[in-house]
Each structure stands twice: as C-alpha cells, then as structure tokens.
Image (cartoon, rainbow, N blue to C red):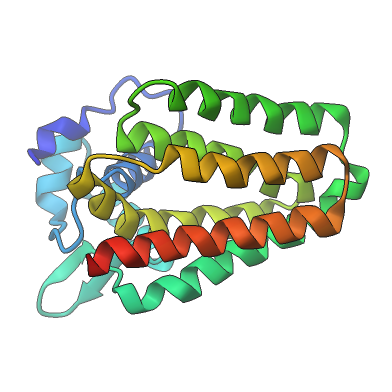
Length: 226
C-alpha cells in the first residue's frame, strides 16, 4: 500500500494525536498496513502531513494494544498474529460478550435491544448481496459490539475492541484470499443470539454466543490449514 492512501488529517475536528492514532489503527485493522509491515515515523509523518510527535505517540499506544510490535533492530512494525494465538484471542472475545450478557441483559432497555436488532438487520441486508470481506467484518463487529455495550462498562468495551482488532488482523487476510465470507453460517449464529436476547434469556444467549464464537474460530482455523 502507498502511504498516501492514509490521507491528510488537516480537516479533522478531534485532537491531532487521536486523529493520527485512529488513522493508523484503522489502516492496520483493514489490512491497508499489512502484518509485518515496518512503520517508520518519517514515512507516516509525510503521509499524514503531521509531525513525528503524534506519530510516535500513536505507535506506542498501538503497541500497548497489541497491534504494533517493536524491536531494537527493526523498530515498529504491524504485529503478526500466529495461528496458535487465535484460540486465546477468541476466548478473550467470548469472555467480554458473556460478561456483557450476564451483566447487562437483565437491565437492558428497549433502546438497547433495538440497537442490536438494527445492526443485525444490516447484516441480513448485506447477506442478500455480495458484500466485501471488509464491509461484512465491520457490520459483524458492530453487531457484537452492541452486545458488549449492554454491560455499560467502558473498559470492557475497550478490551473487546483491542481483542477484535487482533483477531481481524489474522482473519481478514485469510478471508481475502477466499474473497468471500460465510454470511449464511454466521447469520445462523447471530439469529440464535438475537432471539435469546429478545427473550432476555441470559443462559440461552450465553450458550448461543459460545457456540457462535467457537464455530467462527473453527472456520478460521480450517481456512488457515486449507
């Protein structure tokens, strides 16, 4: 990828440090900056049209989140998640979702459930066409994020975002090679989760989420081996 594709940040209406962080983070999670790619401050500074200070701040922040690696010899680079790490990452994702269900579902408002329903509807709509892998993943994440939001716990949501970003850094190239997503299979799991949430059945929602996440892990592992 040409770093010019990152875009200039001059028109952003958030703090410069936050804008730089978001730009680099999104480029990593959607594979415009591929796993293993070296991240030189000078190159990123030129591409984004900013000084090196916010670049370095963003890189250290992304390192803390596990999206960027650092070595004395090579400097910063996009982290490469090995297949052996995937089970632990999917377990961490599941822990966040189950916690949110147990903590938040009993006291969820109709507006909370409506948000989940809306994001599920978007996935249903996408499944009727031929969504790009990235488009599907973003909508899929939005659905699961709305479940984690039930906990009303900002830290849990932050951890979930970090874990999901690390998972996506391994899933996306795998699916890009196939140029397809398993929309039909995924929607079976989504519908089971949504049905349980609508009934406010904590145990059923927990089990549906567990099965959905385990099946997702299995698919990714099978594609890596295949």
